[in-house]
Amino acid sequence: MKWLNSAAAFVATMGYVGYVPVSPGTAGSAVALLLLWFLPEIPPALFGISCVLLLAVGVWTGGLTAFNHNAHDPSHVVIDEWLGMWLSVALLPKTFLLYGIAFLLFRFFDVLKPFPLNRLEDLPGGWGIMLDDVAAGIVTWVIVAALHSFWVF
Image (cartoon, rainbow, N blue to C red; front, side, top):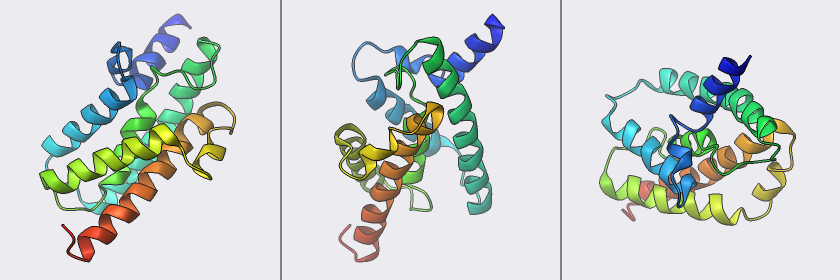
C-alpha cells in the first residue's frame, strides 16, 4: 500500500512541484499554465473531459495525501492549483496578456479566498482541497473572459 500513497503524493504534488520551498501554490499554478501553453490546441470537449478527470484524480490523490500527512489542505498538494489555473484560461485565446492576467487573478482569489470561496475549503477530504480552487478558477475565467469580450484587452 506504500506504493499507492507514493503514487498519490506524486500526482497530488504535480511531480513534486509542490515541494518547492517558497510559494508552492504559485509554482504549481505556473507549471500548470506553462504545460497548457505548450500543449497543442485541445478541442473544447476533450478539454472539458480532461478537467473532469483532473477533478476526480485530484479529489482522490489530494484527499489521500492530506490524510497521510494528517492535514486538511497541505500546501504541497498543488493539483488543485493545476485545475484552477486551467479553468481560468479555458477556451480563451493563448496570449501572454490573457494568460498573465488570468494567472495573477487566479493567485489573488486562491490566496485570499474571499467569501463564498472560503466556504468550499471546509468540505471534507479532497473535495475541500479541490473545489475552492475550482471556484477561484471559474471566478477568474468570468472576469478575464468578460474583459476580453469587451475589448479591454
